[in-house]
Length: 269
Image (cartoon, one colour):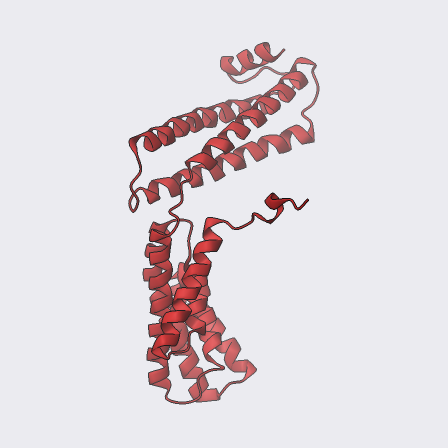
């Protein structure tokens, strides 16, 4: 019997990327323009939230123009050589860094080096066409990110908070046993505590994604209340992790920093 779950790997972002690539290539083909650069742009532009896609689109377009311009310039001066590839890549990265177009550096560099093999004459016209195809890729991917499968991060946040609660309980128990039995802190316990902090950062990132989605999609009051309830739990857990950190500052032979930390040890022992 084939396990269906084994092949259930298509996430929303993968589906949206496929739709954006197909529509971008279809539009460019119907116009008669080369669509390789447009497809590359569509792939890279899909972001976790619609807000990020739109915000970064305004950065990626001028960055792509810089990469394309360098490709035209160095092709005209040197032809297509290994040195040309190097100069286009380095010049594009430096320019994007100086102009603080960091979100568009990858797209701009890919645009520049990809143009070297497809442009041999009519440099200015080719530059305009490539910028137009890049714009199509940016526009289609942004629209797909807004319209198709709008993400709802609240169920993921809920599940992660539940797992975080279990991990936090385990770390508290292990550290409490170590202190009550006057044992040094084990390396494994420290590692688990570091994972707690990292997991909280990941959940907070998902919460920020969810807030951004509210700007473009309608959510019910029930869904919003659910999100705020989970975020309050996350805030409490953040405070608990802070106190757990104080427990790690305690040595077996010394007293803890605060009375609340002593309360944790008394409870666990």
